[in-house]
Each structure stands twice: as C-alpha cells, then as structure tokens.
Length: 439
Image (cartoon, rainbow, N blue to C red; front, side, top):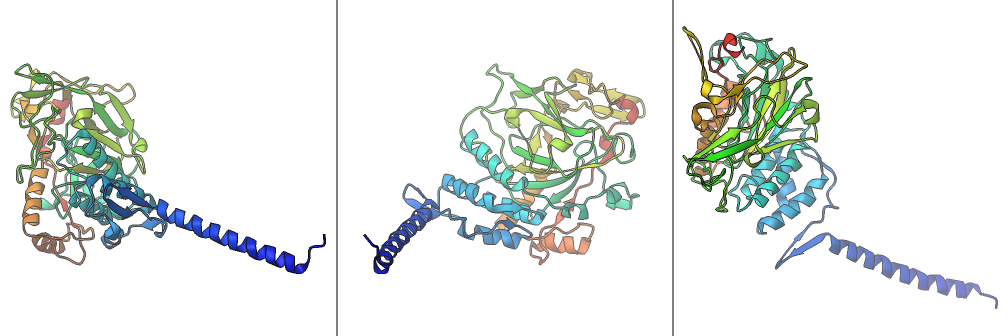
C-alpha cells in the first residue's frame, strides 16, 4: 500500500496531540510533587522557582523566609526548612547567619524549650544547615592578630583569656541563641595576654553548642571528654531538674526526664573521666568549612586546645539557647604572695601528648569550686529579655565595637541602618595562675 502525503500528515498530527497531552500530565505531576500535605495543612515546598542562593545580608534572609509556613506545626516548619536550605549555597555574612538563627528561634525551631531529645537533635540540624554554609571573612574585621596582640590602651585591650578566649559576642541579643567569635592564643608566645595551650574542659548548661574553626592551625583542635554523675541521694547519675533561663523562667527541657548537666539540683555533681587525655581529640582542619563540631551535655564536655606555639586560632560557636551557668573542670589555683595554692581535692591531671611539650590548664575529675560557674551569657540573656519586652527588631550588619559611637547608638536603640553589632568582651588575665603554678 502506498502511503500518501495526506496519511503521513494525519499521523503526525495525532502523535503531536498525544505527546502534548503526555507533556502536560508530566508537568502536572511534577508540580504536585513539590507540594507537601501534612494533616489538614498544605504548604509549598516548591524550591525549583528559587535560584541557588548566596545570603550576603539579613534582607536576603528575610526574603527567603517569605514563603515560610508560619502557621504550620513544628514538624512542618522543620520539613520546609530542610528542603528549602538545600538551595542556599553560601552564607558569607555573619549578619545573615544571625538573621537565619533569629528566624529559626522565633519559629521555635532552636533554643527550646524542648519536649524531648528528638526536638533537641532537630534543632542541631537546623543550626548546622546554616553554620556549615558560613564561609565569610567578615569576622576578620572585628577579630584579628593585630588587634589581639596590640599594646594595651587602657580598658580597650582585648585579652584572650584561656578560660574562654572570648572576644566578640554578636548582637542584637536573642534568648534562643548566641553567636560567639573566639580566639585561642598559642602556647607561651604572648604570656602577657594568655598562656594558651590546653583549654578548660566544660559543659554547656544542658544547651547545645555547634562550632567550627575559621582557619586551620596545626596542633590546635577540640578535645571531647566523657562525664558521669553522682547524685548524692543515690538516685543515679542524672537529674530531672532542668536548667532554666533566669530572666524568663523558660526551661531547656520540658519532658520531665532525667538529663545530664543540671545546675538547679543541689544533689547533682558531674565527674570528668580521663581529664588528662579526654575521649577524643580532633585537629582544627577536621572541624572547618562544612565540617561542624557539636557538643551537648548528654554527650559530655569539651575543651578547645591550641598547642601551637606561633599561631592564634579562631572559631565560631553557636549556643542554643544561651546559658547562665555550667560546669567547669579546670584546677582551682590561687596565685598569691605566698606562692601557688592548688586545690588537690579535684584530682587534676596535666594533658599528656608525646609530640608536644604541653602547657595550659590542668583539667580535673571534680568540677572547679564544686558548683556550676556563671558565664558571660547571663548578661546577654538579660539584655535579650529587655529587648524582647520592648518589642525590639533585628538589625543587619556587623559593626566593630571599637567604633564606640556606632556601637553605643545601636545597643541603646537596636535601630541602626548598619545593623548587627559585635560586642567585645575582655578576658581577664588575672584569672590565669602564674606560669609557675601551671608547671
């Protein structure tokens, strides 16, 4: 049979109609796949309309959250953010990172109160989605070698004490989280500033801490420690009395379960295991970029240790929520005219390292002073409540606190076109015993 041109034309028309219908159906199914239905609520998870994002400032984060399901359940909010954050490639700005955590905290995704450890672990995921992608260098504007090692200028000297080596706290304050930028001095190089070396082993007041180094420094890293407990009434090794925000009364856990790290229960006392070696030491180049460290009291304690003799190390830490008190395990040593008076009841041991002559703190089986120690975050929490009560809004850019006029204006009003300020918190070298006492 000879197939005419008319036959071929008719056949092609039919095929065109069939393929067009199939294409429309595929497009319809593809659109449906980008919508998630949970219970009675439905919200778009359509991220195909977004280009891969780089957050350069807080305004871009605000735009990102315009489609956030604010009326959804906590699980729905978590699921939306998990999918949407896959399209955020880079966060080169501390202020953008601050805004991201602010939005997550406002929506109850980080900072508690937690109804279970599952919620605590989900908060960890939310924080890591942001922290992993922070790749900025703006932290150098407020914290660098030149500033840290400059000659003292009255009260403006920025000490990096071995107790915390805290330099800058990112503002405005938020009761659900705090960002800290920290410096860790090398061993022995700047004795007038800090002895450097092994840091203080400490817990986190039942809060969570996610952190990473901002540059790799050889022989500098993080040590994890196991902790146990000792309830004086014989009820076990954990307490059902959770820690609380002293200004709002908000508990970290509301599950009624026993947890590690309570500062509210006078019967609870933690014990640090293997204080001379810890459970695991990880070099700074392994906690860098998209590799984020994590510690929470259920997992133990940690210390940051800079055993390098030349380089200052820098790190960024997110605490969620901020906490007023925690346990510390460094040896209590009084330096006075009579000499050194170490507390021998703590059972302290120097760090053992076959490759480096170690200096720094001796950590101990029993905690420093036998009680929880106050943290500089208590003042931050107080400011957070004051700001929240006044209806304060978030700001949007890092300002070096050495610009006193700009910093004061922002901190007085929380309204400033430049945005987020970092507040320098001076370490106190008098907290460190004389070098002879640390031998």
